[in-house]
Amino acid sequence: MRRSAGGSERTAAAGGARGRARESPLKYVPLIWAALRRRKARTILTFLSIVTAFFLFGVLQGVNVGIKQAMKLTNTARLVVNSRVALYDPMPIANASRIAAVPGVAHVAGFTVLAGTYQRPSNVQLVIGTDLAAFFDIETDLKIPPAELAAALRTRTGIIVGKALAEKEGWKIGDRIPLHSLNIVKKDGTSDWAFDIVGIYDLPQTEWATRIFGNYDYINDARASAKDTSIEFYVGVKDPGQAALIAQRIDDVFANSPNQTRTQNERDFAESTLRQIGDINYLVNAIVGAVLFTLLFLVGNTMAQSVRERIPELAVLKTVGFSDTAVQWLVLAEALLLSVVAAAIGVGLAALILPAVASFPSQGIAAMHVPNVVFAAAVGVGIVLALASGVPPAARARRLDVAAALAGR
Image (spheres, rainbow, N blue to C red):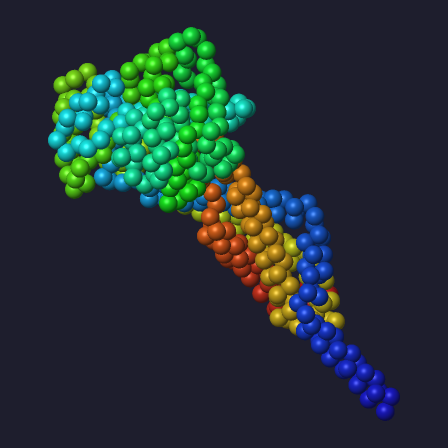
């Protein structure tokens, strides 16, 4: 009777242990945390490796998505005229009238760019000097109240600022913006310029409204060198269906002149500029793929080594009532916690740093950011990484023979 009672007590105790093992998953957190802390240096180094990999993932994917969004703002009905000799090689501003005379051309705007620092050396702003009336007739995506455009036309020092940039810098209409020029010296030998904000424009994608437009004549008349030149011409056409033909006509006008041109529609120009760097999408995917593939081996090796070192401990857990499935999920949860948390932190750092880096100088690319889809992708990749690296050691832990493990076999 005593043995029977004792056996019943042991059976009840074992059943109670199994019942406790089936309690809330939160009870496993201390075990998971203890496993990660078992080899602190190894865990920290692995964690930092994953954070770095996903930081790179977030930055590259953010740049890639940003470029794709920027391409959506381009239009095949708008033409860009550059020097055939070299991109942004100065051309006579007088070429604007010759381009305007080409059949099918509606508007022409020349450009000059003043790069200057605002308040601190690291805050570089670019003022694009152009024929504002012609430019806003061409660039119909830019929305500005007519009264503000009229104010810019009658104010030589007037500038029109993108809404996103104005919000970032805390600017408003009526503010005077001093800039210390980095590339254009005035006739009096100074490099200090002052502009007055008279208008704020917006875009359907507000985050890309980050540019500054001013009057070409104001910058051109005051500068000491490169007067009466334009680094490119922006052209609006009457019939978008004739854009390719009109581009060829413009190049034909300057075919035998000292200032031969290369005319492309806005989208082709942007794509050709990117091709000088390479296939961005391929480069991003190739780099990210190589990094994550390497990371898979690193995390897999870490998990396998961790399980090997803890075989006696896992055997004890099974002895006190943890099921094979519970032990298996302890190992998987360790891999998931390590990978997913590190992935989230890495992409979070990318989201903080990318806009700050891209805003130097703040001319459109400042809108590059890590979108929500990249966060979701990072978490998904982190889960896949954890499963790929954690399933083999977790399966080993599940199959673990208690007697053999405790005997050291």
